[in-house]
Image (cartoon, rainbow, N blue to C red; front, side, top):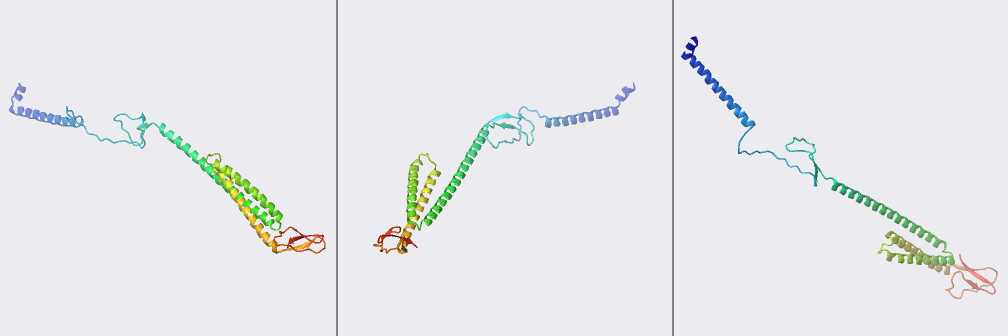
Length: 249
């Protein structure tokens, strides 16, 4: 009976109505907030587009990809291995470069050996030239020895010239090396220089001998003078029953 009186009371009905109205408004506000949150987090539509940032990845070398170490939408960080390019072509190129380097080093060593051989040939030619010059100096006072030395040098020069003539046609055919030909040329040139020097010294010695020679006798007697200035040193002068020989002082 008391409850019916409270409900029938206009003031109580207003209080209840206000509470219900506030509750409805609060529930509506909560629903709106929840709807907005859901809309931002999980939007739903039948006609929507999505935008995202794409980062292009390009390797420094070209090649076929043989291994892939990532999947779609995977989170990666700096330094992670993404994929592996086929290394075989680059290994082949590396081995080819190493072979070329080894061949180049071999060629350089060969050139060094050739240079050393050339230097040795020059030293040998200089030694031969010095020896020939010394021989010529020693034979200045002895025409017979000079003639023998010149004959020896002529034979040596002829041998060197023939040897060079045999080698030069073989060089274009690559039957001989350039070092061999250069060595033969050097030997020929040194021999020719020694021969020319020996001939020049002999001519100078002959001119000196004509004007600075005196006669002496092995035994006593009167010697006759030379009949002409063409008389060469080393010849015997006719005397009365004896023989005299001239000697350069």
